[in-house]
Image 1 (spheres, helix red, strand yellow):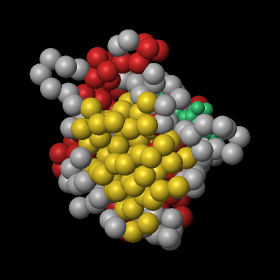
Image 2: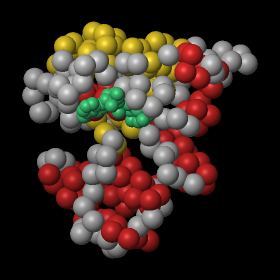
Image 3: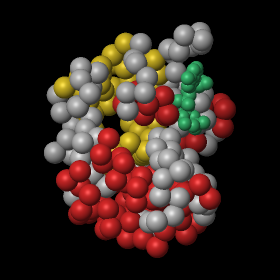
Length: 233
Ligand SMILES: Nc1ncnc2c1ncn2[C@@H]1O[C@H](COP(=O)(O)OP(=O)(O)OP(=O)(O)O)[C@@H](O)[C@H]1O
Ligand SMILES: [Mg+2]
C-alpha cells in the first residue's frame, strides 16, 4: 500500500525565466492509476523526473509513504521508473535483467525473470542483445526491467510512444493484468488519450506547469479538454 504526496512542488530550470512546474499538489493512493496529460512542454516529464529524483525541486516536497524522497536512497526502492531506456545494448536481455537486480541488491527477484519475459513476449529473445531490436522490443525490455522486482508504484513517461497499434494493445494488456493482480499505483503520461482512458481511473492535466484535476464523466472524454487549441493556454 503506497502513497505519493506532492506538496507545492515548483521547478524552474536555471536557464529559464519561467517555471516548468508551479505549485503542484497531488496525492496518489494505493490503487490509483493516474493519467497525466497536457500539451507539449506542459511539464509532464519534468514532474515525473522530479518524482524519480532525476531533478531537484526549486521548492516543495515529494513524500513516498510519508518520507521525503530526497532524504535517502532507499525510499524509492519499490518504485518502478520507465522514463528513459535503462538497458545496456551489449548485454543480452537476460543479462540486463540480472544486472539490474544485482545493482539494486534484489537478487531474490531473479526467480521472476522467466515469467516477466513471457509477459512481455521476449522469452525467445532472452539470449539476444537488444542493440538491433525494434523500438517496440526495446520498450518491452524496458518494461520487463521495470516490472521484474514487483514494484508497488509505477512511473511511466509516454510508454506507448513509437509502438504500433498491436504493441500499444499488448502493453495495455500487460499493464492491466499487472494492475488486476496487485494493489499497485501508477502515474502514466501520454498523448494517447483513448489508451489512457482505458487504463486510468483518475486524470490530471498540466497546463503551463500548473495542475488541475479533470473529471471524465458520461459523454465527456479526455480529448474535450484539449479542444480550443492555443486559446486554451
Ligand atoms: N533540463 C531542462 N532544462 C531547461 N528547461 C527544461 C528542461 N527540461 C524541460 N524544460 C522545459 O520545461 C518545460 C516543460 O518541459 P517537459 O519536458 O516537462 O514537458 P512535457 O509536458 O513532458 O512535454 P512533451 O509532451 O513534449 O513531452 C518546457 O518549457 C521545457 O523546455
Ligand atoms: Mg515529456
